[in-house]
Image (tube, rainbow, N blue to C red; front, side, top):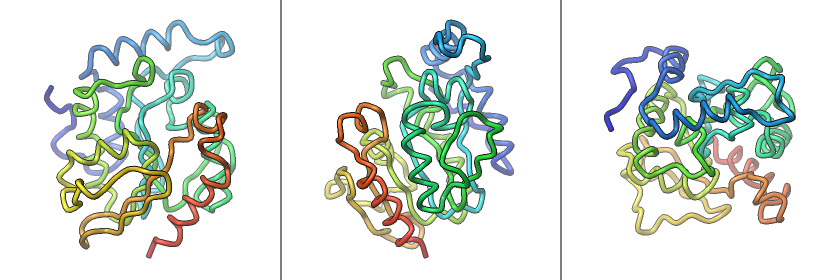
Length: 234
C-alpha cells in the first residue's frame, strides 16, 4: 500500500482534515462503516463518526501518548481518541489527576476537554475487527504518525499504551537510534532518549477493560506512569 498522507501539511488541522478522508485500507473502511451503520443498542439514536479518528491535543505538547486504534463504539462513535468507552473512562481521570487534562471525563468532541502539554494519537486510525489490525494496515497508517511527529516539534517523550504501540515504533526511522535488541516492552519500563533528536520512551499496559477489570492495570499503577512522565519532562 502507498501512503495517503499529503506531501506537505502545514499544521495539525490540515493533517486532520486530510486524514479523515483516508480510505486506503478496504477491510478497515468496510468495518468502521458497518459498525457506524448498525450501532450499539445504547447509542441507537446517535450519529456515529465512522471515519478515521485523528489525534488530538496540545500542538506544543512535550508528551506524546500512543495507543492502538479507535474503539468500535467509543472513538468510532465520537470521533475523538479514547472518548466514550471504558478505556477513556480509565485514562482521563488519571490524566486529570496528573495535570494533563482539564477534566476527568470525556463523552463527546464538544464536552470541553482540553489536553495540556500532551497529544494523544494511535498507530491505527480506523477501528479494526476484534481490535486486531493486520500488519499491513499498521504499516499503511504509520505515515500519519510520522507526519504528526514532524509537526509536533516540542515532543520530548512518548508514553506507549500497549505492546502493539511499542512494536510499531521499531520500523520507524524516527526511532532508529534505539537498540531494539535491548529494548523490551513491560509496564513501567523507561528508556532514556538515545540522542538529542529522539524522544524517550515509557511503557504502560493499555487501559483496556480487559486489563483494568482484571486488575492487570490498577489506578495506582497508571498514576505512577503519568507521574514518571511528568518527572522526565524538561
